[in-house]
Image (cartoon, rainbow, N blue to C red; front, side, top):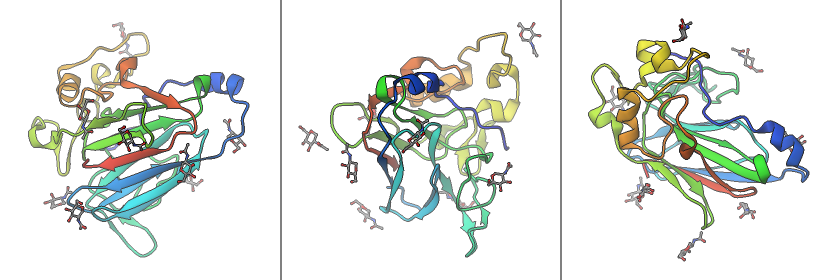
Length: 230
Ligand SMILES: *[C@@H]1O[C@H](CO)[C@@H](O)[C@H](O)[C@H]1NC(C)=O
Ligand SMILES: *[C@@H]1O[C@H](CO)[C@@H](O)[C@H](O)[C@H]1NC(C)=O
Ligand SMILES: *[C@@H]1O[C@H](CO)[C@@H](O)[C@H](O)[C@H]1NC(C)=O
Ligand SMILES: *[C@@H]1O[C@H](CO)[C@@H](O)[C@H](O)[C@H]1NC(C)=O
Ligand SMILES: *[C@@H]1O[C@H](CO)[C@@H](O)[C@H](O)[C@H]1NC(C)=O
Ligand SMILES: *[C@@H]1O[C@H](CO)[C@@H](O)[C@H](O)[C@H]1NC(C)=O
Ligand SMILES: *[C@@H]1O[C@H](CO)[C@@H](O)[C@H](O)[C@H]1NC(C)=O
Ligand SMILES: *[C@@H]1O[C@H](CO)[C@@H](O)[C@H](O)[C@H]1NC(C)=O
């Protein structure tokens, strides 16, 4: 059930070092739960927060954050000290997710890297770790594109991928090179399973080497919104 995190965003930090001369301020990521049920939002950096229906978490991160991740956890129970567990998206049994933690699949993931190549922000939605809730991610201001995965993939998830609260990715279930893309000497191709996800959510990364059309960008110093069940 638990697999290592597979990051989809290209590594652009060398360009960032070369081009980022301005000092980084704060970027606001408004995370809103429009699901009919409570979710426990998770963010690295950021930690975590219980969001009842229609509640928003105004998360502040440095405007040069890299490796940023936001996802929803479902069916959680935490005690007063923030220790417990979630049915999907659990981050080591704590409310406040830590950067080095392994997250329990499946979970729909929003990823971002701010102030990178040419000072641009990059973001994507990844289904490489499966799907739990629909998600939308985009800039607050007009001009650049919002992306989403609004299809309820749980409703027609193949039986072999189906788990309580979500739909697993094929790597988690079958653990083969073909699905996990772990053989560094070969490039991996879409599979019937990754195509199943891509047909339902064309904006999303659906396998570890999904093409660059799954990454989107905005000028730096943009604020963002993430909506669960948009
Ligand atoms: C990000 O900005 C902070 C200042 O807010 C700076 O100290 C840090 O070195 C920057 N990091 C990168 C990778 O540019
Ligand atoms: C959340 O917002 C929607 C749309 O505005 C509304 O229909 C619903 O009643 C709200 N739910 C709660 C719990 O406030
Ligand atoms: C993750 O980082 C925290 C805080 O630095 C540390 O307490 C914990 O042991 C680390 N966990 C792992 C699995 O490395
Ligand atoms: C975006 O543009 C539309 C149409 O021009 C406008 O109604 C809306 O207020 C704008 N939103 C923001 C956040 O600027
Ligand atoms: C999701 O993205 C598609 C394609 O860009 C768009 O047609 C649709 O309106 C978007 N849905 C929402 C809820 O933003
Ligand atoms: C939470 O778990 C219950 C019992 O297994 C299930 O009926 C419900 O659909 C789950 N809720 C979510 C949001 O996954
Ligand atoms: C990686 O793929 C190559 C070419 O298909 C194959 O020869 C090799 O055995 C594979 N390596 C592993 C570790 O599976
Ligand atoms: C981002 O949001 C913060 C807080 O609302 C605001 O002060 C700042 O001006 C916003 N940045 C942009 C570029 O709109």
